[in-house]
Length: 79
Image 1 (cartoon, helix red, strand yellow):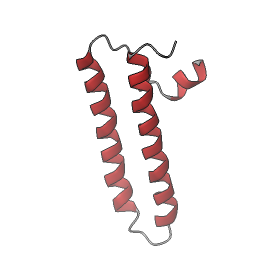
Image 2 (cartoon, helix red, strand yellow; image 1 turned 135 degrees about the vertical axis):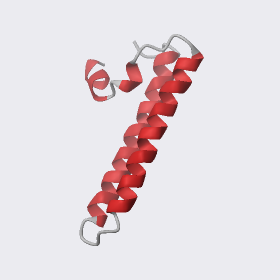
Image 3 (cartoon, rainbow, N blue to C red; image 1 turned 45 degrees about the vertical axis):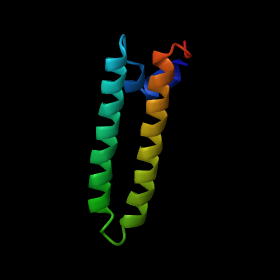
Image 4 (cartoon, helix red, strand yellow; image 1 turned 120 degrees about the horizontal axis):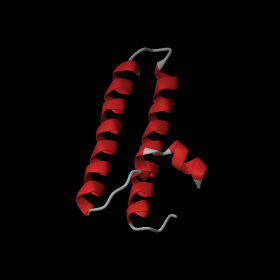
């Protein structure tokens, strides 16, 4: 569990209210959107486009797992 907390530090910040959870989720969505824009711009480069596209998928997956972990942490499912 400690390894997961090190990999997803934003997901395990203290969230006392539902408002704090929503803000945490919005921060993660904004990070994913900004990364998506940057990756979209960089994907126009022909040679690097495929690698950057794969990286974009991984970043999206990372943020999705982070949001799920945030919700599970708020609900006290994870210890």
